[in-house]
Every structure is written in structure tokens, then in C-alpha cells.
Length: 385
Picture: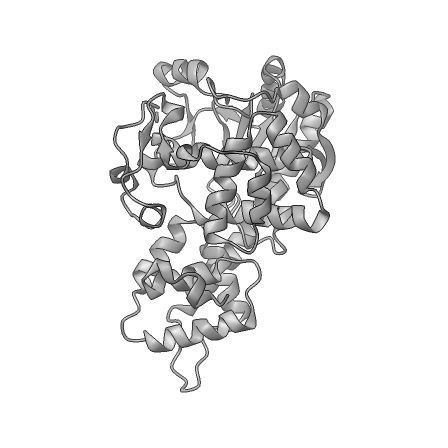
């Protein structure tokens, strides 16, 4: 199905163009459709809306790359179809530069962790960027997530401290690390499955701050499931990440983790209030992971793993909504293979907060709503300082 038909539900031409270009591979037919769309709406196309939404969904570097590679700004009459061409291309090249700097820093961290001799595995971040995306500038990388056992967290924290990291938040001027309040520290100990972030201000203008999260469990506290950290680390695999020896989750654990993460952020009030609960970049990560499972014929193993670990609902949630955006990547028969019958959870949010609600707006309405928190009732109890 051509892009202009597949994404007709988005309504506005700006959103149809965004969804069409938010792919790692864009067909010649889809590029042709983009040209027609831009020509038809040349005088009314809202580039401010387009840039805002592409940024909110963390796909602006990918879109900039696709615009540059396919020379989408060219037109037969010589009037550019894409104004501010330099803006889109600059975001892409700057993101590639940023990811290269992050990789250099995180490679040093892996060396330090290996020297400490303690088990760990890298989640998301460089694993996704380097294994699923063919170009290092396509996906914006943020922090480094590392899975560790609770009893090892203090020792690994010492290794990070030796690398210049401190637990805290960046000061207002971005030059120092300030400690979190006691209230925040107490809340995280009781309710969050991560240690408070370890950060280090960067001297490179491409990176504001280097940030590392130590995750103690793939599940949020009080969440259902039977994936223990010890078992997951027991299945970790050696991996070369950031040009350094490291460790990643097994393919099955990696996919389940990605789905757990997507559902957590899509349904938690904390992320709704910040406007980062629904982001196309997260669904694209899942879509690319699905495509890899198809290519490597690993679906049966992963579906069995999801059912046996009590994560089938979260995997179904992530695949269901990913299929809405990237239908070609998610096989319908694999959704059925999960054996999930009651689908009421697809319209729920707030379980992580301990207070379940139901959406008043549809998924397409929420996806592009600028004020996310207005789509749900109630505020997050998570402190931010």
C-alpha cells in the first residue's frame, strides 16, 4: 500500500509526510508521493507543525537524512519543495556527530565495567542504534541503560565514579552535578527499579551531558512477570558496542525488554505529563526489531519466551500499536500466537502509578496531541528534582 493511502488517517499533509519519511528505507514510490503531496500543498504546508511533531517524536534526524539522500527539496520549476533544507540536513549531521561522541565515551565505560569483573548487560541505546539502524545519524541516542543485579550496583557505581560520573542532576547552567533531594531519593528507593542517574557534564558542544542509568529489574515494582535479573544476565551475549567489547541481552530478552519499555512509557502519567509517552521513534524501534525476527526466523522462540515469562500482554501492546504505524513489519499471525484474549488493557493507562484509567481519546488523536496530559486524568506522583 502506498504511503498516502496507508497514512490517510493522519489527516493533515504534514503528518502524512512525517509518517512516510519516518522509515529507515523509503521506496521510490513513496518519495514520488511525497513530492506530489508537497507540490499540492506548497502554499499551505505548515512547516512549523511538521518540525515540531518530528522533534517531539524524535525522528527529525531520520527525516533529515531521508530528505537529503532522496533530494526531496528539488522540483521541476526550480522552487524548493522543502524550505530550510539546511535545517533538516544539519540536524541529521549533528546527530551523527553526537552519537559518535557518545560512542567514544560509552566505549570507555564498557572497558571500565569489564575491568570491574561484574556481570552487566546493555539495554536499548547503542544496541538498537548499532544493530537496527544502517546509519549512525538516523536515531538519536540519549543515555546508556545498563542492567545489573542489585547487590552489584554499588560496586558498578564505584567504577562509574572512577570514570568521572556522579549521581545527581545537571545544574541550571549545565556545568555541575547537583544532588537530588531526599524526597526524590526516598521515592526512587521505594518505587523505581533504577538507581538514580549517574551523569557527567560534557566538554564537547555536541553532547550536553553523559548519562548512565543502572537498571535493577526489567519490570517496574509491583508489575507482573517472572523475568529475574539474574536469569536475564545469565542469558546475556557478548557484543561489540561503541567499538568496545561489551554485553547485550539475548535476542528474546532484548525484544521483550523493548516492548516492556514502550508500554511502561506509553501508559505512565509521568511520561504523559512530559509529552514523551507516545513517540514514533519507539514504535520504529519495535518495528525494526520485528523485521529482524522475521529475517532471522526467531519468532517462535520469542513468542514462547513472552508467554513463559508473563510478558505476553506487554509484547502484544507494543506490537499492536506498532502495527498501526508500521503494518508491514508486524506479522498478524504473531500477535495471535501470543494467546492474549482479553484486549481491554490496550485502552488503559496508569497501572504503573497504581491507578488505572481508560483513554478518552483514540490512539491517533493522542499520538499528535501537543498537550499529552489532557488526554488522561490524574497527575504523576514521581518527583522531578
